[in-house]
Image (cartoon, rainbow, N blue to C red):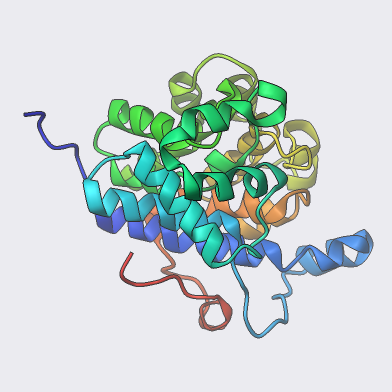
Length: 299
């Protein structure tokens, strides 16, 4: 029998809470982005979004699927994960799923065992290189944080159910590794880059490792990408830079990420999941905690 894989469920739960908060916080800014000057003023002045409830999106819904499979099996089993994702989509398809997932997940509900074939068929047979595998994976990195080889192996498994393109997988490895290091109390972007497979995502993660934290987030996003292209290599580097900028302050990490605009719910979900693996939501204001949509406690 194989020895059991390492498991740090409390760290994974902290990461999930941070991810869901970041996701919901980031989603609040989309209506304002039609007026960039107003949005910029609101974010720079640290004005809390006014909605009574901050709802999370597909980023959190799919992270919940990852944790449900880990809770059940102690590792990623891809057919089970495919079905978990599909059931989450069926239960609430209005969470903001992207085009590729809108096409894929209803098919996985019927034939979850065909995940490899169906994921590879997306985008004219190239598979998805989007940021979806990265946005949901931080709790997995925290779960397996005691073993970086296990983090990488399980991140690949979690990604390839929906993202067959190597860059989509690389984004998941990078974020999972960052969350693992964060849970240990030592987030290091150079170490994240070293663990990421060669390619555009790895090159992107290497760049923020040398980008001074005094750089204004807007300038960092212009250089690193902010998720506007919905690709892993255009999303992961900036989010990880923001996480490394404020490794023990989730609130400031999320404000910093929001300043970059772009796909802000996803960048904030990644930042929140990575920082949250260390901090959870400790130190977050009661006003924010009152407004956020909760995630199920049984997960």
